[in-house]
Length: 154
Image 1 (cartoon, one colour):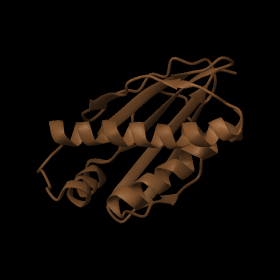
Image 2 (cartoon, helix red, strand yellow):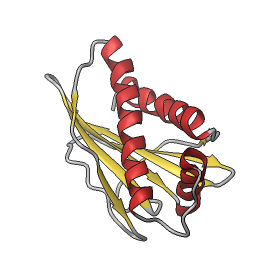
Image 3 (tube, one colour):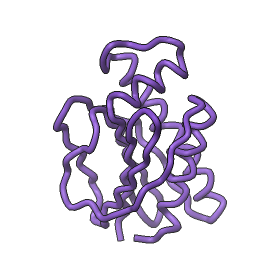
């Protein structure tokens, strides 16, 4: 997979969480993902399609980090993942993808975004409807981990 497609999502996530939730995340080591198992408890998944390629992006939060971001963004901290938290994850998915779309558009890569789907629960799965490799990028924070997955057709 072309790193040119992945990096805009990484920088956009760092920017969105830093700006919207005053949360610093530290990137870990990217790797290929071979399964569909989510690495956290709540995920946003969005499809993208353009004239020359299609792809998908997901962001998965461990529950502790999702609840902390909810507290920082909206001033309320639920006891567990609820409808407000899943709505927030959907909005973060939109914001990150929108930021990446802008960066990619500046490089001549245009695509349209679908509506994000949010899934939650321990052991949920994420299915990318693409033929390319799935890149998994973990990030650490003081409140838990967040993982992004990016996959584009080859």
